[in-house]
Image (cartoon, rainbow, N blue to C red; front, top):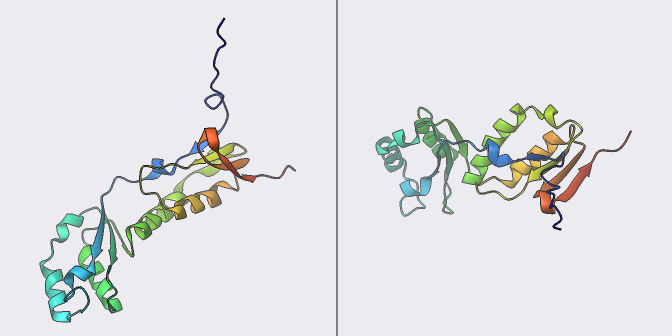
Amino acid sequence: MEEEIINRVASSILEVFDLEDYYTKEERFQIDMSQWLTEGFLLREKDFREHLKNHDWVQYQDAFVAVNCSTDAIVPAWASILVTIYAVPFAKKIVNGSLEDLETAIYQDLLPKIDYSIYMDKPVIIKGCSKKPVPMSAYVLAAQYLQPFAKSIMYGEACSAVPLFKKAKP
């Protein structure tokens, strides 16, 4: 007689909070200002402005954009601002920094809008493995929003979760 295999994870009351569920579909772009610097290091204002004027800004339509300089060039602050001015009519969001900084900013906008009350007094697992570029900062922020509601918070996968928080019993 075969013993029935019971999936205890599937039948548990554990709630999974998956940050990938909130990953937006918009395209992401990195604008590297070094492409418009002489030898990647020297900003010549006239040339820089000419490059910006001739750049195809339409490609950033409704996209998320990160603006940075990948070289060790000392770039004046106005350069990033000027790139932003050109991108504003097209991009949905622009940040100064890396693509990870961009993802952080996106999650900083999205996570406060979630109704966390659905996790009230429930054990919650913040899903770990991600196929999309979810930054660590998003996990940290999610934990902050979940903690006032969740009975407990774990991180990882249901089969191998790491306990992080347990609400004190009254």
